[in-house]
Image (cartoon, rainbow, N blue to C red; front, side, top):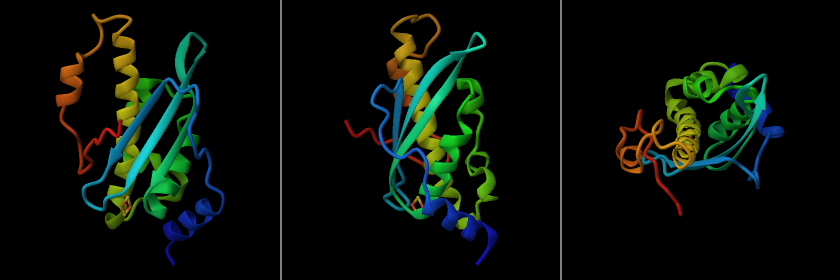
Length: 156
Ligand code: FES
């Protein structure tokens, strides 16, 4: 068994931050057309040293073990990150101590990355209703290009 596989197995024994954050500021949902798996991520922000940072992140997965392990790791890594910092995290970054994603598992990490970006976008749209001069329009958010092989699939 590779290091990555044993790290995934270890993470699955005690996955962190599963389930809804009832008072979340942002929620994102994506589905992978490649495997049919889905991921939802919730974010709660707080103010720290004059900056808005992620206080809590959680997830719910209808997906493979790798996606669950990466989401568990990612929701821990996201604590204390600003929205801008979180936006720059790749699937590989989000897999953290699990190690580098093997080529066959990259789309599993991208599912987590997609859920995070979708949540951050939903947070930006919420801000748009307060200050419409800074944020994208609803139309531009819906039509923005999606990276990787992840397609955003709104459930509601
Ligand atoms: Fe679908 Fe891993 S096989 S996310």
